[in-house]
Image 1 (cartoon, rainbow, N blue to C red):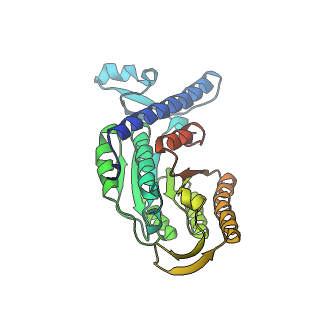
Image 2: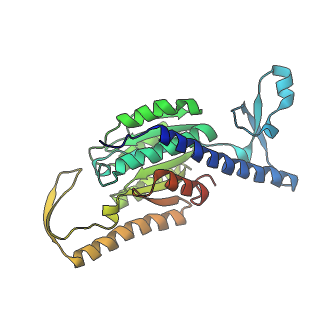
Image 3: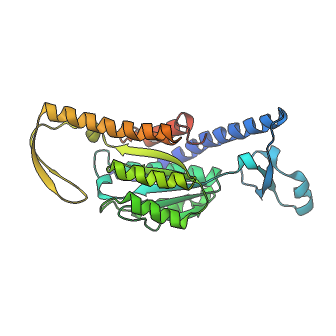
Length: 293
């Protein structure tokens, strides 16, 4: 019997990850308020509704006295972002042990939950040959169960067209936000062209490259038939040590190319190997990967 995609233990891990995220967001905002005390200018922007867990020191108590409603002050540099998670659902994601698509959906759920609780809104949009209908503008922890149902019903099939998918995304989303792209990134040139478009429209970008242990270090020798899970094309090869060394070089180069592109353009990057527990990976993104920086 296969392991359930989401269970009670998964929900406990979500809450733990959200506590870490809230601590990091609070620390960031504290640093901003400290900079005001030291003379830096932070422009007041607006009010928003109070959300349980908000720092009580930024509640406007004068407004509460007048209206009997809780509001918190939002400053220009503290202005939150919309989180957009673009989730690759092409056929190549349905591969590996542990399965890449299972892992990618767990990571997407965790990041979306953190976005629901700590950002303006959180959205998950699947894509393969084109952008698909998704869940948009979720806010508040109560929406997580609808999201988990949505992710459970997704399937991975078809071919990838990241350029078409991002172009469709940009016609729908005008306000710059934080875009987390979860994919195996097969088709590197196409990926860079798509990222150039996202950068042009001022989106912040974070890349999560999902890979199974077999893809990182394939344990295969001898005569084999390899089948492209997206196009169904196949080729027959005799796998040798020399061929495996070339494969390792090519796979490493793909990740390094994404990483170097990211460093050049202030884009975050992380390799997610599916044998790493999803919560360990997400925690590393929060604490060391700069996702909430």
